[in-house]
Amino acid sequence: MHFKLWDDPEFARLHGCLTELQDRPEDWEWLYKHFTDPKFVKKSIAGQKARESKTLLHHSCSKPFSYRLKARCQEGSKFPEIDMFMDVYVRPSDETAKQLHAVMVE
Image: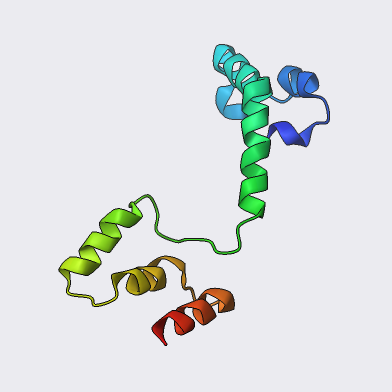
């Protein structure tokens, strides 16, 4: 986000150093090279497009779904996938996820 404050990445490199890095110019240079690297830019654009295409956002942090599913099975759930969907996707403000969960329960 910091690099997006300027239209010209070179100007950002010369004049936009973060205050946290003013005493560490080598780290600022490394960040500049990293964020302007064509490989990084390509991955970043692909990631932005992927996030924009999501219709349901999960709220499970970094715990893998397989662990959650296994825990549900161990708890004796008859429908662990539906229970896991409730835990991971349904939030009070997300009507789409609530409706999908209701259909699954039916």
